[in-house]
Image (cartoon, rainbow, N blue to C red; front, side, top):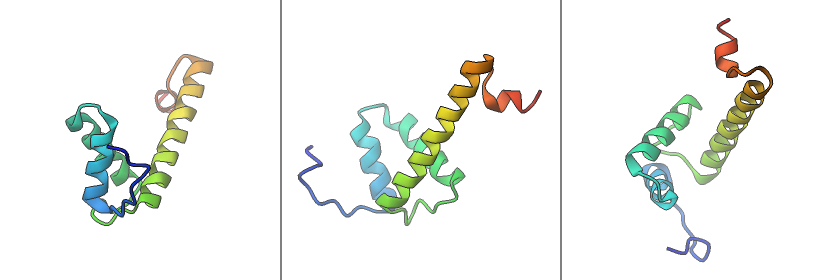
Amino acid sequence: MEVSDQKLELNGQDLLQTVTSLTGLPEELIRGELDQIVAVAGQDSQNLTLDQLRAVLVSYLESMEADLMAEDQTGLPESFENEL
């Protein structure tokens, strides 16, 4: 499916399902992770827009990067360090 040539106006559950399918990864794992990421960000998955999903995923990736950088420096994940 060539997405770049199509004008997709997907929102909400249709958007999440399309993104899940396009990853090529096991859908049950990806969809669960996407649902959790969207929920933690405080977004409504029923009315989620593409711009909102982009913002949510950028924030998620930035937090993952911060955790990895902290882990690289200390040998422990940042979330674990906070418990020490």
